[in-house]
Image (tube, rainbow, N blue to C red; front, side):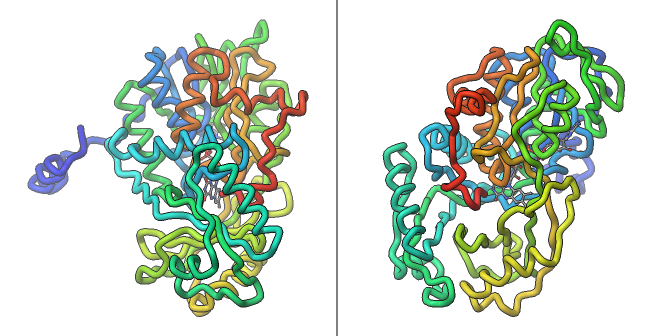
Length: 414
Ligand SMILES: Cc1cc2nc3c(=O)[nH]c(=O)nc-3n(C[C@H](O)[C@H](O)[C@H](O)COP(=O)(O)OP(=O)(O)OC[C@H]3O[C@@H](n4cnc5c(N)ncnc54)[C@H](O)[C@@H]3O)c2cc1C
């Protein structure tokens, strides 16, 4: 069923009793050409582009919980592409260009809102960092503008420019913004399902049958599924666990990342403002909640829980920078489990198992890359070798030393 004004009107006249389920819930088949492990945004986007652009035969997505129950629907939805290095700029900017038409492509409103994104500079080294990154963005064809404090105030009139964290300037990416996270998972799921992809929820992958250096079958909580061609593991914070099942290790650490939202307010802030030095950022959701986040927890864990110390740590600088938020109530807090590589860049790579590929290591900033990552990784899976966008993000870089080191540019990566 195509979603349109006409469909809405017709269903309204019928008291909304005739809507179809957005996707099927099929029983797993005994065999597929491609298996994608993980029903987050990246896994679903991979399956969608595999089916749409590569005529990939039979494809399944195996999700241990429910769609978007991982980081995809736990993140703070920031979209941008102003990374430092050419390989990252190509990958993330490819994604930003796909975001622009994604709602029409999927026939599902993902509420992409390119409302502009500011990175504040609080000291001389921040000023140097934004100048360097801005120049690099310019060279790489990514939009970037440096702003004076007065220009920052024009975007955020109530900002405290001269407090404990003085604002000396900012880097603006006008094409940056936010999108609705769970709609992204649902939109890709619905579109993939309509192309024949089997999305199987409550289906945990717990092992592989590997013979001759290839995955022959994936073992799941719902039985064994044979794989004719390739497997893509797209499980974010659990990538180390899945790699362990396949007999290799990844250079990835798993840590919790927290965020919280305030009670809903009337529209007050119409851009995203990030502050790497004080590890705090804020935007306002369409519901009116202030969406606030900071850096990741300083320990490894798989527990998706928030903690009071993080609220205190992040709310302090937020109130210092935006004193009008000091009496706003916090409504909810949560955490996701993110997968961080030493150079803070993702892994879109072949592995020691010949037909098993990984898409992970997005750490604290993979939501923005969802369409681009799915698009590039689908091409990689379809051909069995890294495509042009994925090639710099291989596992080999930790052997050759050819790192894509975004650690400095991405101190707060979202
Ligand atoms: C609080 C927070 C804020 C963030 N803010 C931003 C932001 O503003 N902007 C941004 O770009 N990024 C942000 N991120 C990062 C972003 O959310 C992630 O990088 C991105 O969502 C990863 O998507 P994914 O599809 O790879 O992973 P996920 O959405 O986590 O999907 C992986 C799926 O794999 C499933 N899975 C795991 N193991 C198995 C198994 N054995 N068998 C079957 N299924 C399995 C999981 O259940 C999960 O559904 C944030 C993250 C958090 C936690």
